[in-house]
Image (cartoon, rainbow, N blue to C red; front, top):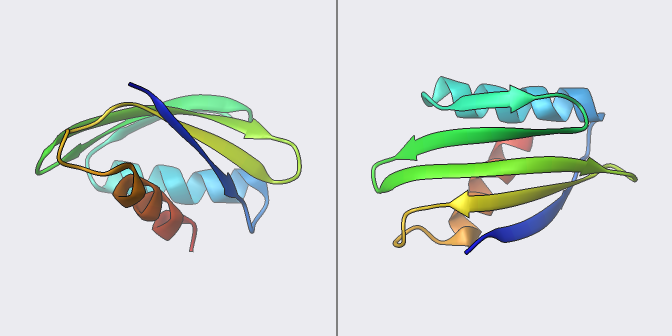
Length: 86
């Protein structure tokens, strides 16, 4: 079941997405998209995470997780993405 959460970007959209992309790709994942929308995939010791993003107005971005390991919480995924932004 897909889960969506919204993050507030503290930087301009392009910079924020560059940070997220770097975090995901440096960990061996894939990231494709632009400043409007895109998709990502990453591997964890527990399994694969797949998701997408949609940039909204007012420096907000919706992150939708479409696949994740059962033992990995949505809160942990959200926290990891927030860490990429800091």
